[in-house]
Image (cartoon, rainbow over all chains, first blue to last red; front, side, top):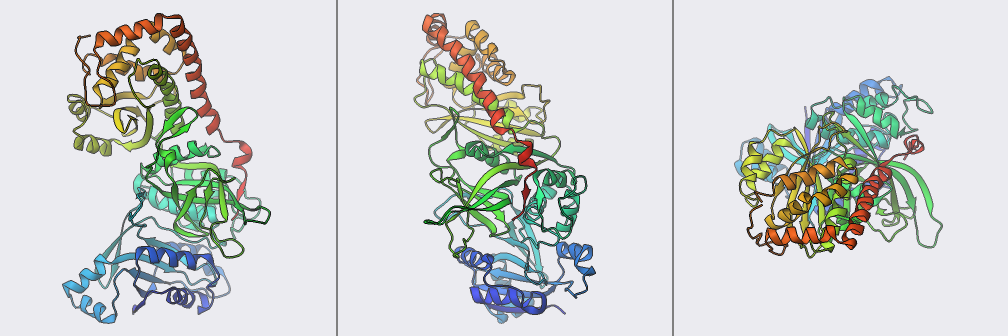
Length: 516
Length: 68
């Protein structure tokens, strides 16, 4: 029989639950950073009640149990406990009423549901599959496009939570890279329809074609980026590496893929920088990027072009050493640009930094054109348009700011359908157009106003120019560019740039000069 | 192209197409304009190539083990 217990939320009650449902009920250490992070998190989302469901069979834990834990001499449990969190205070009376069908009680459970944490019956690493609501948007705009609705059933009542699963590495079947991959696969599995492997399966897949330095399991030695890429290939996706040492390039790329609901893996070095003590490199780490603060400040330049995405001040990641949706604050004044939510050796937050090195994006095979090809074309186009602006051929007060997003055909057309600001004629034409499944949509803005969008075929051959068409918003801006693009002398210089995408973009303006 | 006004309630100043064409022609045929076009041609190529260089991942980076 499943038992349920209800108690008020408090960090000590949460710690006691994690401890009680660990192996032999005494494994969970309150010294671990997760507990304080969870407490901050639950305070911010307003948790009032914990409901414990036990026993609970968790598919991911069961896979790992069958693959590894079951063969231990020590008897580790096969089934878990699941802690549910609610933003309303209640006791067992409300549960009884809900079971009897009281509509108000059911409504209380449904409307106040904040998600769950599965507690694994292991000696120390007990945080299993965790689906919690994301931070709210009070006082700050955050976007978590990688989340989806998870349905939970208790007492036959259906509860839902919008989330991306998180779990702590157990160091036996999973290292941090495995936990990050597991979170990413939970999103891509639904997005691209592939099997979602358990942590043990991910570790084995990662080591299938490139041997680890040490043994595969226990997985304490971690994975390389190449092995993580092999794990991505094992679920029939294609890995894309982008060097993340340039912060602007990282933010433009990560935000563009995240907005297409694709979580990315970020690898880099962790540094502890406690004032008054020498900097300490703690090692290499991998996290799953899940969201970002909506960029609001002035656009930031990458090389000479201005982009919207780098003006974000935060990115959010599933960091198995911290917790779900943990914050990485962007601070360009620091030696390492991302301030993590890790605790340092003195149990303080605010002194541990992440130096990004590689962004690894798991992609459906049809998404062939990488974001770097799109940025290359935009960088070249920006040079031409900025020159035209400076000599007053293009009469814009401000330099153009670029915003790049990967989008699926259906999402794009829904967006265009709702958008009545596109120059008439173009809106209808694009809704009727035969477009590829995936598109790069690049918006050009100036002085807070949208001038035009360019559409790149993300499924195109790499040798193609990728640009399929544009979407005009400002008649005057588009016409000015068209006049420039039609001038034979200017055309010959533009051709000498040797960028096919640039030529195609300007040709689109020239060809539509009569209709702008 | 028709000689209609480009006026639009946007960030771009309204001008006629004739005026725009004259502006472009005057610019590209001037000595200064030619120098600017040549410089932009090179700058645009370099800007595009920089993205590819920046995004390139080194083999040593790929083989670094993630251990934490």
